[in-house]
Image 1 (cartoon, rainbow, N blue to C red):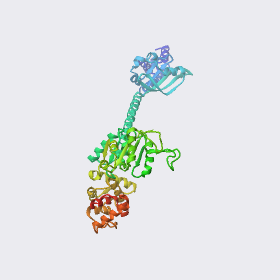
Image 2 (cartoon, rainbow, N blue to C red):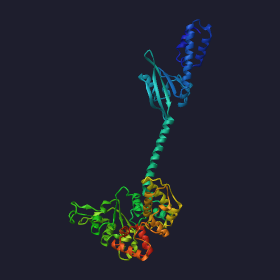
Image 3 (tube, rainbow, N blue to C red):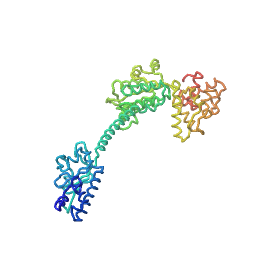
Length: 501
């Protein structure tokens, strides 16, 4: 090989990138054969070029990124293995060819033309292939002679992102459904117990909640009727609208009509200027709960019936009909059907209220729920009063299961609260129970009740009757005057055969 051939070889664009195996062989031969030239400078230069080309080739092929090099004419000078894998184009096919024959959306050519670099640019060279590009112009003596691009394949990452985004939307949708389901269940989940009687009434109430039907909830005092009413509202389509409750037995008869229907300005002495909305109007669009509906006066029953049937009412002193879109839930602890027979409650109103009857069973009819209720209340109360109660003795649980609970769930919770307040141990034992409970179950004497002694039943009966008469038949006041819980008063009245006064 003469000097001219060596110079042509050195000028070859493929030498320093080592793409042409023939060029490499000739270079290697020159480096090993001193007879081809006597010029040591050429020989040393060729060795350096060969080594540089070999290292560059190894470096580019070992890269985890796709590497492409183009010359000034946009012909591909180098194409590494990652580029082959990414684009499915073999090096032998693309090297020496114009890159525009293979790609239409190119960054590497823009970099060469614009003489500016690009760093971590998001790019989609082919549909469905996503890369991050670092691209720089190649300059010699201030002149751009080509460009190089290094492309990191992020296709899997993008696809995973889309999948995660889709899954995230699905999760959000599920959350919305779960939240909607939670709203529908709402307070029903807080009505504890798994006895069949309770489950049946809960299922019935949940179905009724999805309608606008009027509901009559009946049951003994303390069974949780108000909680059922709130649960029905929270599970209904009206849950975002007002929930208004009025106790028909707590409002004086003379004021009840204005409380229920409101009044116009100047309709009576002391009426507010501008009038006032009543409970029916305040509950418009939502739910109106009429607690102790059996206490409602007959004349007001007629007006309530009109609201239910015609969906209109008048304020006290008013002449303008007001439309009502209010759902009525009535609550009673009385036998309203019996009251109808005795002429104490309007038959037409009863049937209008009793579209969906819900009877809440007393605790004595679902004693299998007692352990669940006990442990739930104990946990709640122990946290409230910062106590370390963790257990209840089997003997106490047996007593609870044997007791009839005339005050129902409310009495159970109140009793447990009293026990927790005075508890000194981590476990509740028989001695922690109030004496009235023990006396009822085991005929033990009262130590703290000076009135209800065991001297004679007739004396006890006389004292209870007198207390009831003084209280006007109000058992709560009678129990307070006797110094005993209302539940004990109920029990002793049944035991002694005392009828209500």
